[in-house]
Image 1 (cartoon, rainbow, N blue to C red):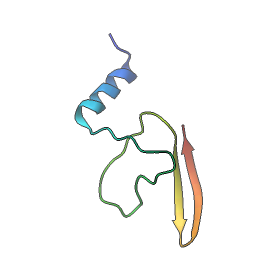
Image 2: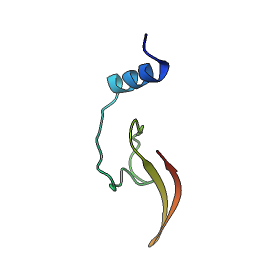
Image 3: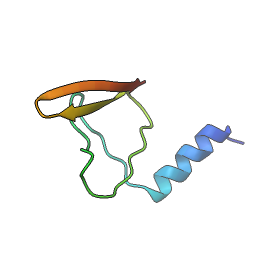
Length: 61
């Protein structure tokens, strides 16, 4: 039997649409649509943009 985290990943892949996004690309902005993104591999950094200023709010690898 597969470990729970591997079963969850398989379930997500079966019902979702996998995307590969190059490093440094913006995945979405706060006013973009109503999609949900789940990071299965890699690093994500969340920024808050205010005018010309961009502030890092969180990072996860």
